Structure formats: C-alpha cells, structure tokens
Image (tube, rainbow, N blue to C red):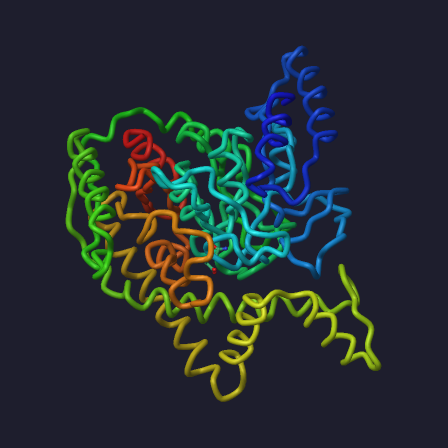
Length: 451
Ligand code: GLN
C-alpha cells in the first residue's frame, strides 16, 4: 500500500484521481495486516485499488466528476465498494471520470481530463485513456493502483480498458448491485473490475458481485469462485464472429487484431463460426435515445435542494435553473435536453417507445446467436486511443466510439476487453468477448487463453 500511495503521488500528472485518500489506505492496510495475521484474509486482502468517483463512499467526497456534487460527502457506502472493503481491499482514492459517466474520452470531467500513460511511438502528444472510467484505466495502466472499479453503461469499462492496455469486465446486468452508484441510465448501468490481468478480474468480480435486496434489479444467484473458471481449456467452444461488426472505415490494424484473435482461439482448439446480429446498426441510435432519456429522469434530483451545490435565485424555479445551469457541464446538459425531448408528449412513441422495441430486437439477436455459439469475439473500439482534443467538438464522432460496446449493454449481457497487441503507433488495442447472461465464467475462461 505504501508503494502504491507513492506511485499515485508520482503519477499525479495523469490527473487520474479527484481525491487521493492515503490516510484511509494506510488504515485499511493496517487492519488487513491484522486480519491476515489471524488467518481471516478475504479474497482482496490488502490490495490497493482506485474507486471510480461514481460510487458513494461514506465520509469521502463523491462527485461523479460534476460541479453540482462538489463537496457532497455521502453518509452511506455503495454496496459494491462495501463488498470490496469487506473482502479486504484498500482505497487509494476516488478516480476521475467523465461527468456523470457521460463520455468516451474523460474530457467532460469538471476536474479536468485524464491523460493516458501510453503515448504514440516517437511522440509526446497526450492521448485520452478513454472514458468514462478514464481515471481508473489510467491509474491501473500506470501501475499506480493494482486494480480499479469501473461502471459501464454503454462501454465505459471496456473502451477505456482497450485504450489503456488493461482488462475491463462489464458483468451481466444485475450481477453487481447498483445501490449507492450514482445513476446515469438505470436499465444499463453496471459496475465491474478494471485490472492488469484476467485472473485479477476474476478475483475482483467475486468480491464485487452478489445479490443485494437494496437494488430491485439485483439478481439472486450464487457468486461462483470465478478464478476456478480459468482452466486454460477452451477446446470445442464455439466463438461467434458477427458479420455486422465489420464496419466500413474501421482501420486495417483493428481488423488485423481481430483476425489475430480469431487465430489464437482456433489454435487453442475453439471453433470460430460466422454469425449474424442483424439489428446491430440500430444499437448506437437506440442507446443514444434510451441512455439520455433515463439520464434526464435520474438527474432531475439535482435541484439545489437536497444535494451539493445551490445557486440562489429570486424564486424557487429561478434557483433550480441557476443551480442546474452552473452545476452541469455541456455534455450533461445536451443529454438532458435530448432525454426530455424523446420523453415528451408527442415524441414519446416515435422515439423512446420505438427505441425500446428495437432494444428487444437487439436482445433477441443475441439470444438467437447464443443458441449456436458460446461466446462472441469483436474489437472493443473502432480505433486505438486518440489525442486529447480530437473529436471534442463533434458529439456524433465521439458517440461512434461506442459502436461495438453498446449492443451488449442494451441486451444486458456480459463483456470483457482484453489487451490484444499494439497498433502501428505502439498504442494498445483491445478485443472484446461477449457472453451469455450470467455466464461470466466462460468469458473469463476464453479471455484467460487470449492473454
Ligand atoms: N460513452 C458512452 C456514453 O457516453 C458510455 C458511457 C458509459 O458507459 N458510462 O454514454
């Protein structure tokens, strides 16, 4: 823990943390030593991690990287962070993210953007670590934290993992409790581990997962010992290669990495099978209706009355308006506007209801595919890490980053991003494996072979 506290200090230039919590870390580490000495070690005993600043942590400021929650100190602990402390993990700090987890480059944070520790060969230009879990990805990639928590609504664990050369696992919707995680889009949000290795992801998921009566969408299934799934044997497994993920304009090196991944799995005895997920092209527009719709409703609670910042006004309405105008960043406002529009009378059926119907079609595509394959292999993102500043003025170009990650989010299915070599510029590439609902074990087993 001491070494990691020091590493966090030494990598401050990455802006990976909103708050560092060395006193808490050292106190937890002491308690860990005692538990270890008395033979009561948990699965994460003494492991120093970063906690994405979207998880409420009792007594430690929790902001969702927004100005509106600046200074908000929760009086309660999120279930997932509580599970991790119970398993012995140690908190190095609250990691930076896109504001309210909305973004793909960690540039919408009120506390400034995060810098990827990776650079292009022969260049010192700063690259984005991806987003929204950019702080978590950067600090793990820089080896300042042994692991970190992330949340994934449409790719926010998997895409930053790919950009930063680490492993990121989005579990099945319902696997990890959402209680105490600041809500973005409640039917999509899911917490998961961001780690250096597949085995670490298995260990951390075991600590994070589990039924929680406080989250009505939490699923009551036993939590397996995920590490036991890493048998190294994937002979006979069928790996789906979805035709619709071959998108025009995807860089050749992403295609190549994908081909390489297919070859690795074939060499290990699995059988690649071409499949079709016909509604894939509707996933991105569907997501960018459903996620903003839910966000506009979830963020209505930030009214200057109950949480965080307040900016006074001449009337109550005036106070709401001033508070929200000053408290939310541009991207958050854009989403609230889109969300309230698609939910408004007259447009509800045309946009929101239509999106919900298409969401079912997307989920059915996967259901059908999993009748004949065990996992699906795709690229995680359509490009390697890009420069900070790029795509910033073009929300649509930014949303396109999520093209490979949102379909599984809409279907509630688990996905993992695994580092898969380097781009021609020497930056990390990631491949994504998708699995059946609540079958994180097969995902981990296959991912373990690709590492
Ligand atoms: N990039 C996507 C978005 O901006 C996904 C974010 C997330 O998964 N939290 O909505």
